[in-house]
Amino acid sequence: MGVAFRSPSGRALRGACVGSFVEWFDFGIYAYLAPIIAANFFPAAEPTAGLLGAFALFAVAFLSRPLGGIVLGHYGDRIGRRAVLAFSVITMAGATAAIGLLPTFAAAGVVAPLLLLLCRLLQGFSAGGEYMGAASFAIEHAPAGRHGRYAGVLGASVIVGFVVAALFITALTALVGNAGMAAWGWRIPFLIALPLGLIGLYLRSRVSETPEFRALQAATAVVRTPIREAFRTERGAMVRLVGLSLPFVVGIYLLLTYTPTYLGRLGVPVGTALLSNAAVLVPVAVGMVAAGIVSDRHGKWPVMVAGTACFLVLPPLAFLVMGAGGVGAAVAGQLLLAVPVAITGGVYFVVLVEAFPVRLRFSAGSIAYGFAQAVFGGTAPFVATLLVARTGSDLAPAWYVTLLAVVALPVALTALRTRPAVLPR
Image (cartoon, rainbow, N blue to C red; front, top):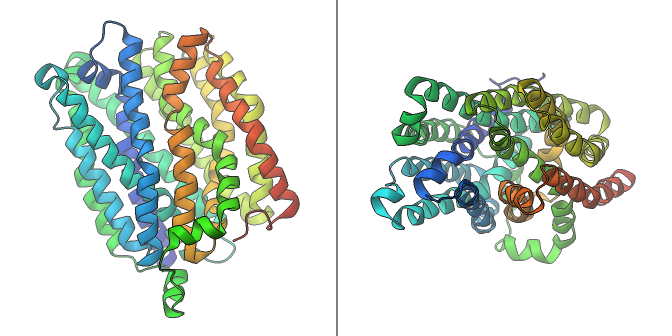
């Protein structure tokens, strides 16, 4: 794979990956436990209403991401990537562990979902700086010519966080039973987030600041107001990056969070749905690394164009296959949806980082990515559930992704023709 984890750059990648794993394990357990959370915090006579409530709070965490991106992006460009990443991982872990201690609606009434809302907002705030921070940290440490593989490995660590979340919840459900899981077992995965966060904090604290940011400090070129400067000079690049991000940020969350719930509605047992999802995510992680390696050899834009084009055609086919029912169809359908997610995910980090100059990278990237996540990514499970409820068609979420790919593909094609002028580093 070409990554020496004992080298300084490899240790930086390891610190970025472990922290991102923790962050996305935390998000994954909430997404996978959405039906149980709905029953405990949003008791409703109609199951869809409760599930919409749980997914709405999933989306709320993404709405606080832009604020987190602005605040943490400012400090990431002012004082460095390392300190901000340490803050983000421990904040996410603390907020997640707090969810495991919350009273349910039956015990505290409306106070319970309000406290859950507060925890989700804190999670989103910390995640607002995590994605861009980890990407900048890893890739600014990466050797020349290996940005793609570092980006692919970092993307894979996000997927692995979700895989471990799914496997842990499946094993815990088998151990305590469905009744025990609904009553008290759901708290355990949230509580485990705290020691995992401490491990991430330890690993990140042992890695030095990135060479590119240290050079910026040495040249006294650190910007005093990076947010204002980013909006003044990088508006066009941020808008293009938002458009480019749309099918990926929606597609990945449909795969990670919506499909297990969707399969459950089709009659697939919860444990089987989670295991099938975890099984599909393993080749996604491998595919991201492979896509990153290919981008180092042939360029990131051909890979991004290929992945975006796949989003045009594969999501409807994926949902058609899953709708046939059965475990085999569930796996096959998810694999079809996984193809464009893996291809674009393998190069997305490096596209994100190289879109902006070092002095404004954390701020501009966090704002653009945070906006795409808040408006489209985080709302994907909610919008998918709502579209199915309103249209009566299980294919509605797939057509939603295809529509977003229509928006993104011209951006990717323009970048391919004019590289690197459209999104300059």
